[in-house]
Amino acid sequence: MRTPSFYIFIFTALAIYFLAHVYLFISLKTGLSASRSTSFYLASLLLLMAVLYPLSRFLGRAELLTYLGSIWLGVLAISVTVFFAKDLFSIFLSTKGLFTYVAIILSLLISVYSFVNEGKIRVKEISLPANENTVDLKGMTFVLLSDLHLGVIKDYNWLDGVVKKVNSLDPDFIIITGDILDDRAIFDGKYSDALKRLKSKYGVFACVGNHEYYAGIDRAIKFITNSKIDLLINRSTTINNNIYIVGVDDKRGKGFGSTGPDFVKAFTSVDKNKYIILMSHDPSYYKEAATFNVDLMLSGHTHAGQIPPAEFIVPLMFKHSYGLYKNGKGLGYTTSGTGSWGPPMRFLNSSEIVKFTFR
Image (cartoon, rainbow, N blue to C red; front, side, top):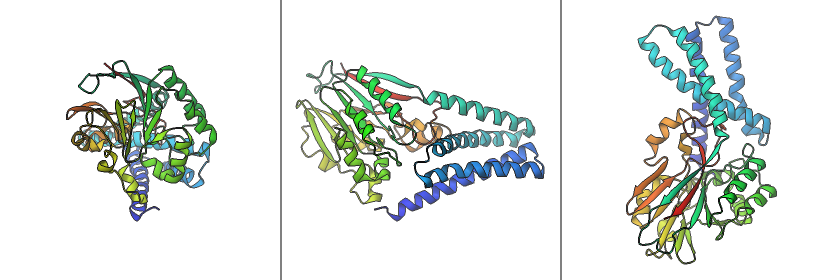
């Protein structure tokens, strides 16, 4: 059940989206000193591009429209960032026409690079330092995935490639920190079959993200559990009684009638003298992780910003927006994600699969 706050969020997002087009139009028109006819054609083009993404959302599985709309969303975000920087410089320098042409070229170059860069998934390897709880874990490995966003853009072929790459790493277990599904998920059996092909000694464990709620939480839970993934929502499980894996709910689930993260409930049966891994889609709960003596907190959600301007805004919103960090007696890691949301584009960051090894 979607609450009023969800619809307020959607309205705000749409307002920002269309205002970005207005800003880009004004900046182009002013910078190029466009004539009335040129301004008309420019406005018409931007209006046409503006309706692509919302229309694709309305029509559901319109794959080509969704793909084009998503790419335009990325180009728009990058262009607005570049043109905002251009307009700041234009306050002090009068060469507006030159700056505008430079901004157009720079926006296109960044967009093309970001599109190509997003298609590359790197494998990042991290060694976990020994502590009093890792005596029996030396040499064990596990893989972290997050933010697959399976749906119209991240399709079966892409997922199949990810599964093969993970299996080649031969992990002892696999963790997925939410957003397995996109908000327009395709609940197709072949996607589930691909996830079932993930191979590890002790299994696959996951927590939910905000997009599981956007996709429909009941259907998402059914899909994930049918994919032979142990879904932990405010509960824990153990591997050989040596490692406790704890998963908490996503806070945005409250907007859909869920309880949200319940750390007391999740840690009820956890032995604090064992190695504890916490899965929290949102990296904001590092203080709670330290309170419950978590050895390693794993998160996603931020995508490391993906593209400008989010790449510059996300670090201001999250203290631990990307990478490994010290947290109390333990550690935390926020991944940039294996897939991407919206635009299939990344600029100053990469899609990743993370392999952890206990020293």
